[in-house]
Length: 332
Image (cartoon, rainbow, N blue to C red; front, top):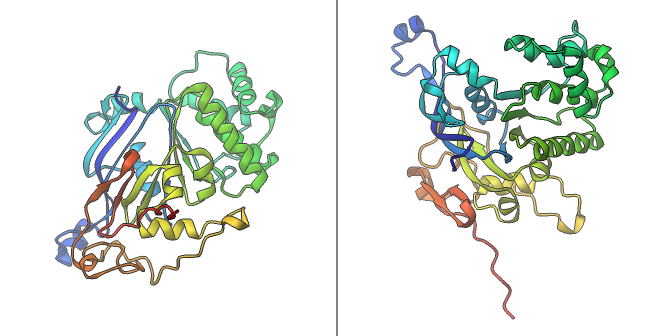
């Protein structure tokens, strides 16, 4: 059975200078690669987490999947259809099966509309108004744990957690097959974060939706995702089952991210792995392994030759010349 979403060698570019400026400055390539050779798949009912520092390309992937940014190279198949081959009208039809949860739960809601209008707006946008919107609003609000009378309120009358639930209801209005959640717990208290994540998990089990989570919060990734992908300078440096990566990261960048994650169990605390230097500019990518300028394990080979993708057990892949070794059993 084919995956719901299948991305192969996707490349997304941003123009750094206008056409006239690029001619005047004699720029052969007035673009930067924000996403390079990214490949992944997502099954119905699964959750994939995209993790990385700011500017690593996570949100660019989401924008490209939703048709908000052009894809320069590669293929993207969603529910069996090649998105790059679709015209605007055909893509809009497919787009109804995708939904976005924006990062700012309050700022993403128009302050001039009631909650009822906000959660039922997707019906009007996609021409599905031939239904009782009062009933639909009540159904959606109840589904996310809010009373139907919340429909008469305005966004400024909601708490952060309530606003996030409204965002979930709005995203699920058209019964999508894929939900892209951009920092789904941003700005929320820890207890409210857990409520939102549990809500998403429950809805996923009930509805069978796939979820793509974009976050830098590793606790969110551990709590809700089946698989995770670590991004650095627009590339995946490691990808695999979430628990396998948490148990044994193979790439030094993943190790550093995990070591910086707060550990609730003091007995399980890990030594912090410090990275030297700054994240390189996308305009001036390092030769060889692009992480070598910050890697504590870099060797001469890393500075000149780009590593290839290596596949470990359980579909765990990583891109490193000298991957971290799994722990060896203690001798008896």
